[in-house]
Image 1 (cartoon, one colour):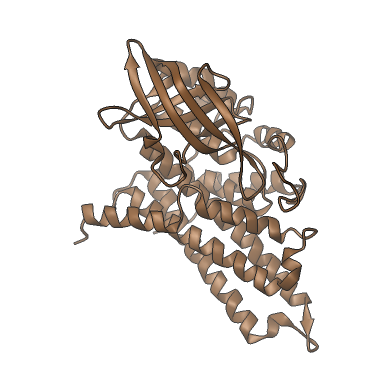
Image 2: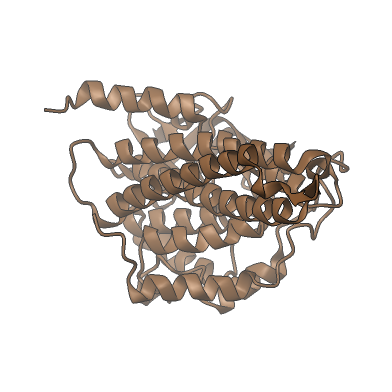
Length: 377
């Protein structure tokens, strides 16, 4: 395996560093002190900055104003965003647009892609199902009624639901197939109820009651939902990696300055060993992330489908980011819980990422199913 990034991918990462350089991870009220959402909306100024830097259209073709890059480039940008806890729907909007481009109708592409790439509209994905534990595609039913599709069901914890102009909703048909419905904001029969994540962000419970959509707004291509779900999970791994790397750096800086018995605590063996273990976690998270992103970007065959590499990456991301923030809290002592210091925010975001799109146990089960279906020689 050669994980050397191309010049275009490196340029995207450098552009992201420039855009995120001035972002403060504690620019909104602390979730520990806020009973509801920390803010009503995403960081719109940052969203405009990402649009100006052409980072919202990375995965789009040139005919839609995009750069025509791949999942690896997106993950590089997401990694940078997580280091500053950037409050933008970058993953969801980019992944949804990529799915529309790959599988959607010509009408949907014309209506959404160029505008999404310019940041004029926001897209999101309802990927957590009714409870957050069951498959998302089983939470909503889809049936055809003449020339239209009719949707019924509930999707929980939809990220940026109140900001999104269109929500991509997976749904299952009576024959067991999965379709993707493009549900506009304030569409007849669609309603939102507020929910809140551990990070303090406002989520939405999306209720669909006899929502009627034209055929052009429903993607019924085989494999579309599986491809989108893998891209979302891999992007979540990139966010976990960037967050974990920033937290470990914060821990190194703190333990190098904090003294006990006249010496920096970083020089104590027990502290150094714990930090070294977390560094190993991050390198494993990184290797499995790029393997999964490469499988999605290249479409290269393997002993298992790409979903197997995605599952391995999400297992490492979920377990690894949890261990990184727990060790950071331990080594910071009481200072880590101080609401005037941003570490507690990283801890809250890490918990959200750990559970997003399923915890490690769920992906271990999925990996076991894949191994059973594709025995390794």
